[in-house]
Length: 232
Image (cartoon, rainbow, N blue to C red; front, side, top):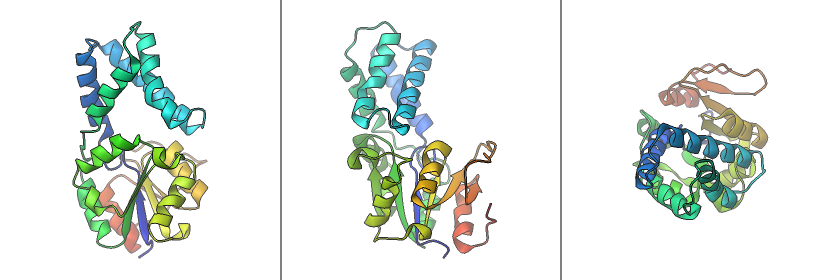
């Protein structure tokens, strides 16, 4: 096998975060009588801004947890308690273990060949809940969550921790599969791990980001492991 370990990003690589977020957001907005297109658009913008700030190291996970809701409620001119709103949303999200098509089959097949782990920048109790609600969890030999170790992708420490938990695997023998260039592929580069960009939407490949592989179907990972898939 080309690799001893395959590490996966979680959201939009294995679990359908867009659908999970849509369901949880719909529940939250309805509960607080905020179910309008403007409210949804405003929350998404505030949430995205906070996650990008986390990746840049400008805020930590504890700050992100409620800042996005404070910003959202301020923009909507609402006086609701951001902690209560945030807790309602996050509890709803933690129950949504919606899988992307082909994710379970791919993970099951890879786990029969090599060790499989997952690394995620998500909030710990949400990611634990979503994975526990999915059939993927039994196939993961390691799960490293940024909030639990105090380092978020693209910080290489999150990958090094996963490799340590998987038996001290060398970065040169590991592959990281993820959909995000700024988070996943940059983290792979920083950690000395080969990066496989999961790009089902066929976005343009950037010239300044070193990638070992690019796939549009998780089933192609089997061919990568067997050495029959073309390298970039």
